[in-house]
Amino acid sequence: MNPDEAPGSVAGHGTRVPCRIVLETAADHIPVVAVAGEVDLMSEAALRTHLDAALGEKPEVLIVDLGEVSFFASCGLAALLRAQQQAAEQRTEIRVVADDRRVIRPLTVTGVDQLLKLYPSRAAATGDGPAGGEQG
Image 1 (cartoon, rainbow, N blue to C red):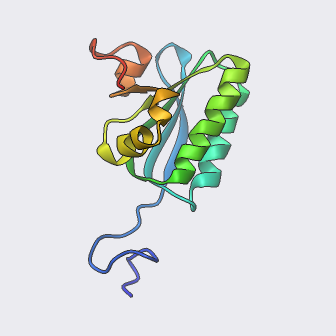
Image 2 (image 1 turned 135 degrees about the vertical axis):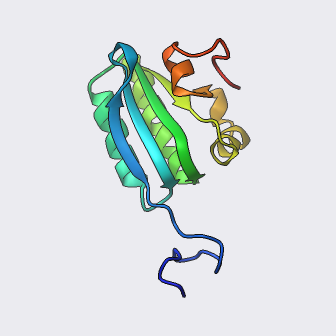
């Protein structure tokens, strides 16, 4: 096996893209959990930790930006659903940025898109973007 290939990957079909998660602040001081790379079992704990930290501040709105995600496994869906439950209890609105089929498809196939507000861009999620607004 080529050392650049992730375990379980098909030879010659790319490498695992490590997940990078950062907590940022958007316009109007809206917290953003920005995620890039692959959301899978290897990154699930980090995603949950960042979501918990952001929700711990009890913001009115939390944006979860999945615009740079290249793979979105069911554990990512579970992390979003867990965050949504916590957010609902504290009256925080979660807005999910997703513009790639690799992220949107798992959200729609499972019906999670009916529970979360989806936006095509961070600008749309903050209200600063074009009038396209919410997806779904």
